[in-house]
Length: 240
Length: 217
Image 1 (cartoon, rainbow over the protein chains, first blue to last red):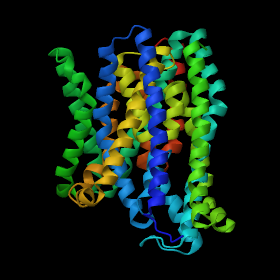
Image 2 (tube, rainbow over the protein chains, first blue to last red; image 1 turned 45 degrees about the vertical axis):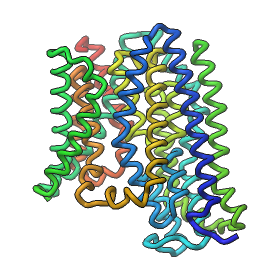
Image 3 (spheres, rainbow over the protein chains, first blue to last red; image 1 turned 180 degrees about the vertical axis):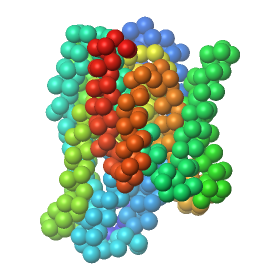
């Protein structure tokens, strides 16, 4: 069988995997929606979650697509398409491909033509990320039980515990933005983008609370994110 | 666990173990179809370069994110990937705007709804992008647009940070100050931000516990 990184067979495999991911997502979406309705949440509220999340997801999804474009230069389209739709993220897939290519003495500056090298890269990409998918079912009961117990014991501390976890995560990413500060004016860009996003969210919050523009709540995250991304395009040539 | 949670756990297990099979079938199918089984040493050498880091990150992520995302959200988010840059922020933002608490059944429903929507939209955008790749590659690759995608994390966490920090500013001081100082002192840690998330969580929890005991929060 003649090998090509963009063969019909590989596209077929990709489509089957994508359909599996879509089926799982739709299954959980429908279950959560029905449960929400049973619990007395209004259809309008639940639809608002779906709408605001959909809009919010568009820009990051395009950024993930950019990952497919990057990997497609040497792996063709189907494998990056699969990897970026299931478990993967460019921050993992690129090092995995590079590490295997180095082990085989190959360069990733051109399309892979050796099927064995291609399958080696596919195995490393898959096996390297496997714990992320195997561990949730193994650890779920213990972790979930811990959360329930925590809430039963002291509900107020349970709330603070969960909020602190979120803030711990957010702090790590906010802190990361300052890592390039010492590298000169260009290091200021991510900080200014962060501040722009924060300011836009502040304005949205003001309009929602003080001007009764409740409809804006659905779009606030998207406005602050996309607005800050546009701001990055404008200021980067000035500071680089 | 209540019935909905129990059932979600059961279905989640079925889906995630099926996903393990599907994911492993991809390289296996490539090997069988092209009769191209790779040399074991090449795979092991390749794995050696990434597995020690990513297996550790995998363990850390499961322990850190599972309590935040809930049962359904976790099973779905770990299969569909892009956890820190997309799934967790979307669940967080949805729970916050709906005024529900994580770890409760309401939180579970909203988190699952957000993560499922996020997965569907992302999958569809990538699929549409793949179909139109020849048309959109010059646009996506254009240097003018590069800063927008390079700065997607600050653009995302700036807005999310304002929402959370403004409501819980006392709880955010310790982890935020620590992280800013850490990244200023050791900029190279930016590449390991995934490993530092649990560090931020531990600092936030320790500070919150002290403030809670003293009655400051």
